[in-house]
Image (cartoon, rainbow, N blue to C red; front, top):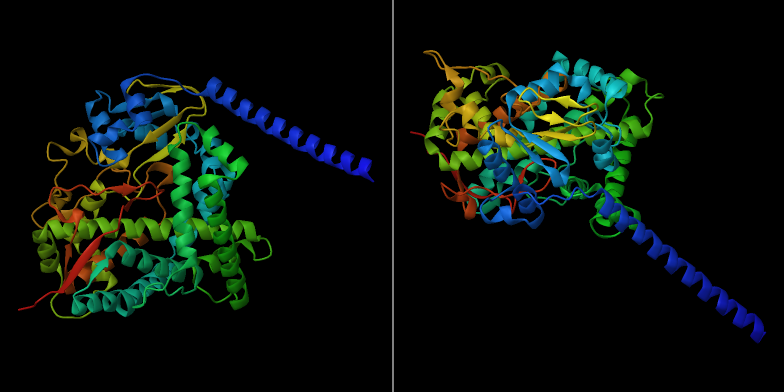
Length: 504
């Protein structure tokens, strides 16, 4: 008996020793791989990135990039430690997104980075999978029936939920986080338009949404992967299930469970006579052919496109209007008199409001940068050599701050720059100079729907209320600080006071 116990104890010790040795060997392998593959560089750009010393002079990483790109004669810089080329040169953007499109796909590294969250959704695939999803999305989003259905939902959400919440805050004299309000509004709206379901996030009680919170966490932590100096860092953490990767795994598990519940509910309600986008996708693909993983990836893609981008743009818009009350007054002057709701046709004719939205997104694009990978060695129009497999990032946030594109007053909020002629008609800029909605073959299919939603909200809120930002983001010269994420969000939210407009 004693001999058996001693043998069992010895076996356990041997197993533990073997496990410890294996772990140390694996850790040594990771360290050696990092040493071998780390893109060591001692240039001032890479030193500033690795040490974080850029933060002494700039509020955001994007502001630092904008500074570097303004200083560059070509509008392009290398960040060697990231193995990345960053550009704000419109000729380079056009070359990547149109002229030599096939040589600049999203690429496998990008797909790996976002794959746990976005899966095989349209924002994370190339080739035939991308073309198939894009064709289907183009048919649905271009449909008059879908646009009419979407605008009715937007108008209902504005009147029944958004305006009452803001009116309550005005009457109570309360400070509210406008970023949180717009996120809730956009989440309810996109869920109704895309899935035919109402999560009810924007109620007076401001209920907690597990889905929305998990989605926020997942997008934030996924973006952190892209900021790592080497992908081996986050991959090692994922392998060991520690730190941010452990938290990301939990968030994505909850997103998956709630997306699956949405799909089950949609199937139970039926898709035949439904106008929401998920039902139309299921009907187009044939419900039997549309497996749950494919539909789950569509759900997540719709949420990313329809919630975060719209709420981000609306948040920075009202931050700017608070600092520029004359612009808000000019928007009111453009509106028809009385209290009648603004129709879809009215919205299309509001050129000044359209210019205000575009000027806001020039300075604060919801998606501040986008990356491609160079499939085969290439040379950009500005003469920059790009090796095969290298990452190339074009930077809309920096491009909105380039004097070579927007002139000496590039830092000023001036909607008039978008207007032309005696009547002040809106004149769009080339998408390669203003790639807020991407450009070329990957141009955003939901652009018109997103702009319509932003315009409807902006008009309704400006007509009824004055919004005053309080706290650190209320100062005229204060630059907002953004949280790392796939879309821009202001650190600490946007606390505001709401006052009813006094009409004479």
